[in-house]
Image (cartoon, rainbow, N blue to C red):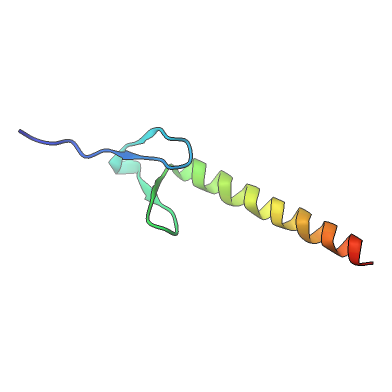
Length: 58
């Protein structure tokens, strides 16, 4: 009996086909789109927090 290996994207929870599977910085399976969207959103969030901090210090 052959066991089919499955990977699931930890961001969206859906199955990631192994031939398209990517891994994040922690080695967890992700869809390329999910990961790139997450990184983009984190970058935007960081810039907003930095901008807000600069305004409160001035």
